[in-house]
Length: 276
Length: 186
Image (cartoon, rainbow over all chains, first blue to last red):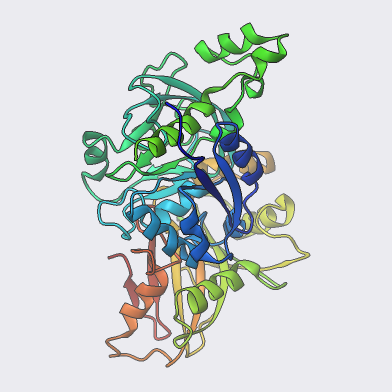
């Protein structure tokens, strides 16, 4: 389908984030126009954009709690309003932490904080942890999965210290699964459910990796798709089908610059915009 | 006899984290009329089992030799016996808000360090962040607005409400200057 116009995406740079440029490149590679937008910029200009991405990093140096201070910034009020109008908002890692701390996700009662991203729990270690993970798509009704099918497997790295989805509200997580708001879970390289370390790298409840609001236009995901947007970003020794594709592309410049699994997340954002 | 040794660590250089939290509370959350200052310290509680020798000396050695809990170039610390999360004494216009992760794994995290230093007998380790909040008007017994204010400072329930603890992953309670404690979870 030929698009009548180029969609515009704003990547929000809070002080301390460090993935804005990679995120912008990954979004731009899909043909969308993408700008890095400063957190203290004129918020009225945000309405010019069709979608928003909150990138990874350490907003406000993770002071108090990852995402907690950025969630109180004025720009989040504007993002809240834009999301309420149906525009997509994807938060990646630190961006996901901002979305949860501001009550945009899971958004059953929008603006109310219904979940947390707690410190990782891992056997015999503590703190920041990074590794390649495999993810199973649980729902295709979100801005991060619209170009995917339920059961598809992605290989995308995580890198965080506070990435464990939790809620103290009884039954909330079960409800998220039932309503399709859990859009990705950590899985084995073949996509099998496996809720143990290191497949589930942080002890996240029921291996949750990404959660959407009920409408699906706001998604908080801990893995970093911008670090898996091209095949050359994948490690040669990666397990599973994505590892096979990477190895098959070895030695071919054209093959290695082919889309990686993270590009499918960006394609999902584009698909969502085309469907609005 | 089982004993608990408490370690309180605070910065002797400006605390940027406390400054950021204060700015968030006073400017972004519009609590500047009530919140006047904020200080932060980290409390560790080490539970020792029976027959653990001299637990206080063990914690002193742990701090001195590990360089994990306190850096002498920028931290001060105090070690006391007991498990009452005392920390720095409160002024009459201060309250303390104690925040702890619900299911932290500190004991397992620190175990390799304890083994390396040859410190035995530690059965559990807990960690709190203790925020000392200076408020106006000063806290008084019978003030019906005090606990709601502390909840608005302490527990993140909404986009504009609460900062210091996320109730889904952390617990928070207030300690008042006259010794009363109030849970702050909704």
